[in-house]
Amino acid sequence: MKMKNIRFNQQMRWFGPSDPVALSDIAQAGCQGVVTALHGVEVGAIWTKELIRERKDLINSFGLAWTVVESLPVHEDIKMRTGQFNLYIQNYRESLRNLGDCGLEVVTYNFMPVFDWVRTDIAHLLPNQSEALLYDQEKYELADLFLLERPGARAEKEQVQVERLQQRFDDMPEEEKQALFSCVFQALPGSSTALRKDQVLAAIAQYEHIDAQQLRANLIAFLEAIVPIAEEVGIRMAIHPDDPPFSVFGLPRIMSTEADVEEIMSRVPSTANGLCFCTGSFGAQPQNDLVQLLKEWGSRIHFFHLRNTKRDGPDRFWEASLLEGDTDMYEIVKAAVGLMQKEQRSIPMRPDHGHKMLDDLGKNVYPGYGAIGRLKSLAELRGLEYAIHAAV
Ligand code: DNO
Image (cartoon, rainbow, N blue to C red; front, side):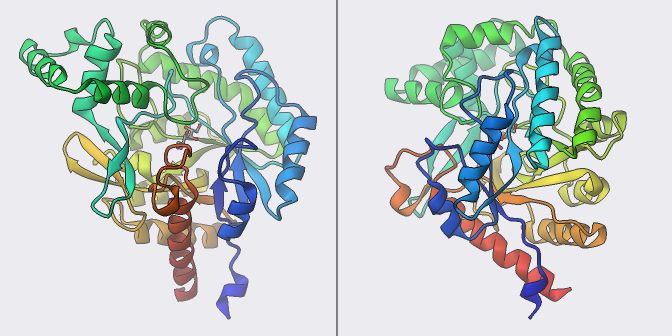
């Protein structure tokens, strides 16, 4: 009975006590634990041991483990290296120490300016009537040019292109414009708050003089300051790739491609400086060879986000079922299992965004984070992982 020897480390994301998907729901899904964060703590403040322990005890009381933090967010001052960045780095170090002391093992974070992730539709209707998240470059451009009215957006385009987009925007019904605004700027979990237009513009303007090279240097300086503490307390950092993996709103991006991974991993060459291998984010960039990336940087992968995307045009992708889409999930999980067997370790993995479906339709859940769609992905992932383990 091979099943007995498999150390599954499958997780579900939980957004804390206010998440409409309860810990008891997640416990029934058949995973080993949840990945979560102290969402109530302001970005930049210290996570105290008391709060961490309290949360861990709550999770454990449902028979679930908490070993992965997603996310310990990085304050914008650290990304820009302005204002109070030294204080925020000190606080980050302190939080890592507290997390390590409480037995947490992996800390996920991202280094994307202003936005955690961007989509243009959170309810893209699939032929079977379930709903998926979608990114459409043209809709993004409409949001940028005419809803946000970002200075600089027009100059990045040809006049004829602006005119064509203007026509499209004028033809759009008012409700669709509003839905687009709230989807792009306010709907997705992970960002600290729902931002107003003037706040988004102000936040973007702060990056005016920061290009990719500068942002990368700031990330490296941040890593140099925190990785020694992470090593000391047994925490592995896992940077999440850019989502989508290209520049949005004129902001720099530094974790989108294989070259980006190579640069950040080799500049701070410690196991504690690792990667959250998100197939959905890397997979939306056709040039990325995911299996190759996984094999090359396997020893630095500390967390897997498994999700599939389907490109149905050069500038548009939607989130497909786990086993469908452009990424060959069988090859990915096979490589992941091979990595775990070779290195004799168990790497946490979680199904990422799921479709909104069945009884979740009409319910108010975090976009991509309803119970049933993710339960479906988890079940598929579990079967896939089991079959691969059993075959080798
Ligand atoms: C989206 C998530 C991201 C991720 C952060 C990590 O669904 O993958 O919000 O948690 O980027 O810091």
